[in-house]
Image (cartoon, rainbow, N blue to C red; front, side, top):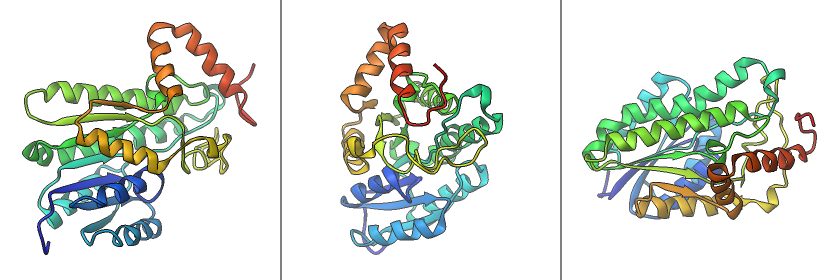
Length: 272
């Protein structure tokens, strides 16, 4: 690097949505940004936007469901910048199908990306994060607290992610590692467009009104502040906070409320 940066931030799923917004938000600080995603063209477009803010940018094509890709991402980061201070595990995919109708390969794909992608990237980055007393972020969901109908695979992956990160945090109580679990709630992004249907194909359109949701930029700003303040958990939106509260103290009620709400989605696969 031509001059010294304070931190090196690695962000997966950074070609769109929350990941891209996080890259742009963190780039405004004195940091180096490493962005990773599967789509090379979209990744380059994100990189070009970030370069308007900082020259310290590295793009790495990476499918987080592949262990070797995750290892390559971390190796290239350290080769370029020499350290890792923050790893934001943001890459993810959703699904929308009743389990009885769904091919089990859909659930496997969601788990491989959302859960194992987090495990792989964190595993390879951990030795460097321990050296810097850095931060691991898991971008999870309210679905990691409340099982959502027609999202069995998605909820399973987020419950698993959160359990993994909670245990990792406890293991590292005395090492200085910071672990943040961020749960944005419904956010305007393309995750519902790319969500998998029962046959494994993308549903291609969102069943929800995206204009009434938090923006990716708003979520990124909250994640940035949570990393700076070393928060352990970030739950966004009043609806999200209520869902988490009710799931703990009134599990039957939240099940009914969630069912009724999601059953009202256009073309929902839930049977009344």
